Image (cartoon, rainbow, N blue to C red; front, side, top):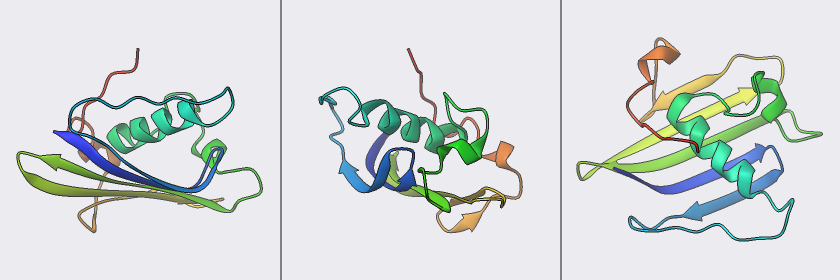
Length: 117
């Protein structure tokens, strides 16, 4: 399984950006404050539906924004899986897998493992 693509809108320092990844090796390089750690946190968010760094989801909304969206396309066992996570300020988190909303967020946990070191 690997993350093929990620799209961020109003997530932390990112206004709107899209990244495509190799199934082999990917490196994130840039000056301090350019958003490398925020990208890693967005990947964590796709996997566990929560931030590694922020305990409150509202803190992930870009300063001055009203919402955030994190979308990812995974390839797992040669099957494409689309994960969509969104949050409006003052609203509830919305998490979908292939356009189907989860009944419980806990149903998502464990399907897309990752490790933060």
